[in-house]
Figure 1: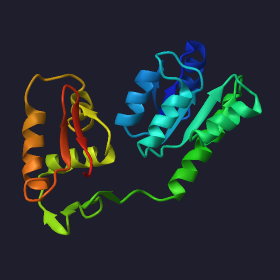
Figure 2: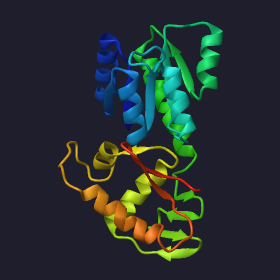
Figure 3: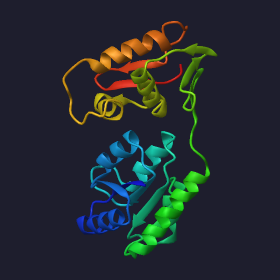
Figure 4: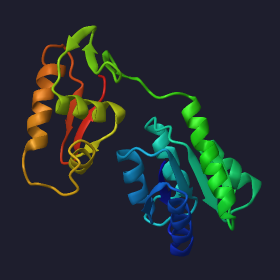
Length: 225
């Protein structure tokens, strides 16, 4: 299971990361809200463990609300030293799936994480992406727009899938390099521009409205008009 931990307390983070890895899970860690939001929005995780109070200008509630507004349904376990009922309610209303008060026993945290993951799997995997009149079938690896089949190369398919999974949000060059090309550095080439241009020729050019938009000085966005 792949887990994202967003926690600024190094003692708590070290304790949780060590325990989860010993339990056989893959764990990524962010120590502030901005990095946590970027990782949660640009990578796939089975569960997110999210601290309520975070530095970086984005606290846990704001991070969670942003994810849910982007249709990110990854199960989220909130951690907080705030034990009042209204604080727990606020976290759940923001889109949290469970709430654990600090201090906590690791065995309880692990049990809650595993329960959230089972609950998420019971809903079944997502097999189709839809944005406007554009449809992608992840099982048959086919794409149609306005019921018209569109043939894509493997990299074009992966690029479009990434854009559709992040529909109506800005997708940066860094996000595309990491999410589509698996680069964790900028190779300083125009590879992204070339592939986006080719994708537009197939997805947008034959149709009256465009779905792929350039966001000046930021990146790209796939959205219906």
